[in-house]
Length: 411
Image (cartoon, rainbow, N blue to C red; front, side, top):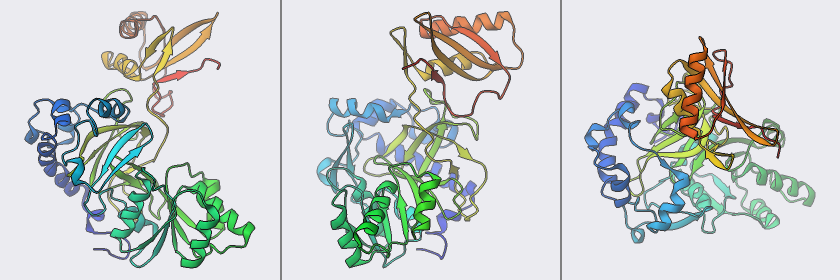
């Protein structure tokens, strides 16, 4: 299955071959998904065989993760998006929201083994897993990946720091999985209590920020950590490799970056909302809008893996803002630019003047004029039902951060 540096041959495929494989399998995935009532309602009368390219996929509607709470409440337990019956999966889990997820009985259904392998975990290693096991999927996700690699797992879960250190000192695991914050807590507590955690040499962390300062501190204390970006609905979406240049997308997923508030793919390198399509046979996800911002990095990773790289988590995409008592959505701002092709990036700046909410649309434009300014202002008013001023700025002058609305009102 594995080579010295890569989990399998899929990771070093020619990118064109990867695209052929993924989009060749997509029609069958869609046909299977349409047997579930939730997907049948959401996707309407699509012809699965016609969805065999990125362009065709981009025409399908998004399923927003933020909508799953309401959809599952209306049609429990999974909003009708599960192909496999609840009684036939391995576990029934719950994430904050609450959002409910099934755990497939398939081996490594969340695709964690690749991320662990990239971290340096190998068959026969012992992994100390400090993700939660109570109701939530985190603990099971990482444990399942470790088992797929042929590793033993200490189910540490959260809390009970000194008990976890007792287990670490006794079993001497070489790897840690959990949040970077809790890894630091374990190491700090070991130092103050005299307990031995020195066997841990590497870690796969997620669920919290990993600033360079914390990564360097952990390395200085003997633990080399990499991170992964994962969600319960699709598993590990992307993971760091020893190259530490962005995150490599998992082999069993299709990732898109779209303009926040829309389903429209952005140009390569532009920051936008991360959308994922997973090939789970039990609980497939088609164009799930994660609500998280990211961007594609150019070129392959120096580690030899050839799949798309992303920058990782770059913030939240949902910038919905209340102005004068009415909600303005990122999609409305994006639609202004869509209706006026002369415009580049746009950003709606919301401020307060004379105790009133004020909107100013900043729009990149190489050639401006009063007529265009008035037309853009009219479009903004038509879409938001509120008046706002328009200011043209130089092309490429607005930040590439995926932000469509900037709320600059004092708290």
